[in-house]
Image (cartoon, rainbow, N blue to C red; front, side, top):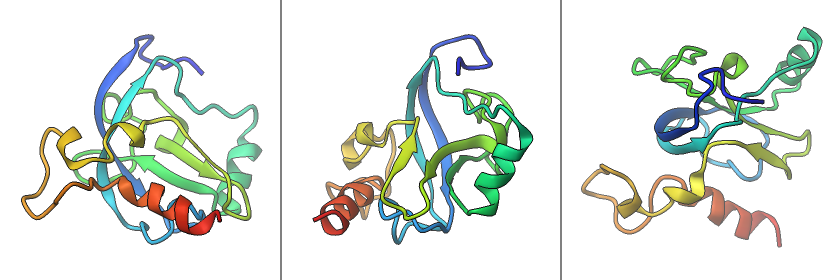
Length: 138
């Protein structure tokens, strides 16, 4: 759905990765990291509250926007699109499919980030999902 801001949002935001069975995000639970946002239609919306409840009950919420205190947020600008519960990524039950709106492919290399720790070499934090894909989807 269209961003609640009614704007195209293009910048960095912070997300946290939850402990789910997603093969894409295997080994990343508990991570808090920046990600590129570049969309005008990225908001998650549910037709009924039961749809959101079902997603939560099945532990399928993979990633969520967080604020500067590392708390999940629905508040702009930390949540650039206004998604319910700050949802940025979900998975299917067996973990093979992930749907995500921010853009990890834009920051998977360290040099693509505006700042990164000195001990990083070429890989950024998001390289892990691409390596997981290579290992888990043969």
